[in-house]
Length: 327
Ligand code: ATP
Image (cartoon, rainbow, N blue to C red; front, side, top):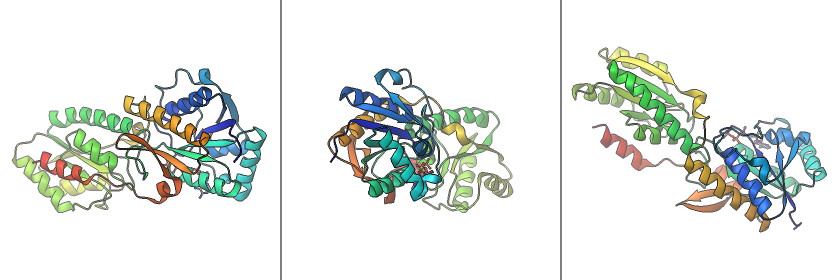
């Protein structure tokens, strides 16, 4: 295997808080081991165009606390084609880049894997996505920050809910997985949590809301993941509840993109720093096609293939805890 003298780092797919901290870690680990580092702008799109910037330890000062990604992120149609990937390979060769760290989600990892298989180019992945929907790590970068953002907003919504005796449906991100809904729901003391993994049934929702009214609760918050199993979106749920429980005044809040932004939490900054070090050290050890992850507070590596194909499972204990809490 060719000796690695220069590593390229990029962010790809949806942005997440902690991506900047991960770039900083990759750049500084390269500096520590006295190898070069190049930033690749706009993910695979910038790779195809050769939109690179040489980075040294000082180039990444003052970014550990910044949300988003200063290298920008993008989705690239061209990289899905053989010609696009060939153009990307030519650009990397021209810039003397020997290996890649891809910070992104499962789509970005799939692109990296295909690229490795075609050109035998070393690739390491760092999971950067707020949904926490990647197997092989208990936490993806940005997930913890998002939980804190969502809990903070729900606390504020609760002030209004309890001042007016209202019921709020709050929609959070999570088309396929309910991690954000479940964890933020327990953290914010939600009455009910509707997630894609479990169909609790509309009757149970009504029953729970009836019970809480009878027990004297002045307000209720129901967290709904985008892809929840009831088959109704938050607005349809509002209509449904108002029809069946006219005693409730219902409001809806869709949190949307504000869940993606903001300064990363301490947890995400530490995680990003650890993951960046492991990604670079793995490449220097001759490893490739692995994703860095966190398992039982240890930094681990998982084959990219397994990270892409595996399923990230919700913690069922939390469903039980939530049930008990909403007694
Ligand atoms: P998020 O979790 O935020 O959606 P992601 O990394 O899964 O992030 P995608 O849009 O799925 O985001 O993938 C990012 C990019 O990876 C795509 O725009 C494309 O350039 C590349 N990519 C994805 N799948 C493939 C593939 N099968 N072959 C080549 N490139 C791919």
